Image (cartoon, rainbow, N blue to C red; front, side, top):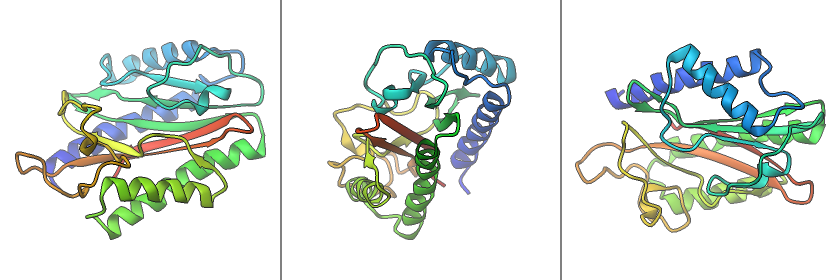
Length: 224
């Protein structure tokens, strides 16, 4: 294992502990607003790991806001009694970036629970494909994610299915350069080296939506 991957995994491990503690402390609960949850998670991350910096905006989406991808900024919603919520946080730990996304279901709605479970299940299927075909292009992988979501009965909700990750501040993720993303216009292999000959490391993200039911689910972490 290269040292960069090891350090990225260590950062992600702490992000995983943070998210488990979010659940343990019941931070995601009916009656809380997305902003309330965002602030509570920020305070918890500071308490647990002295995390004060994030390399991208902190995202909490509830209810119909779970339809919205990263770039959008929908209005602040209150979590309802029977709701679905996802978090997408990019904490910086000892100057290494993590990018971690998970979906939580408040209540017992079976469709929401299935969608949340599928977002994780499909992530592992995508990672397995990358293991088997490391030279797959960003475009090929994006289209695979779209088709995989459809086969599972959902729509793929994101304009990308992942992006580069690294040391902070890593190579600026210029939205105009699709090579930085698992994007339908990225025809470069994921295992291609960067301009300095270094291995590139990727985040895979799965965003499922059901526009009729106005719900979405999200799962995101480092591809290994």
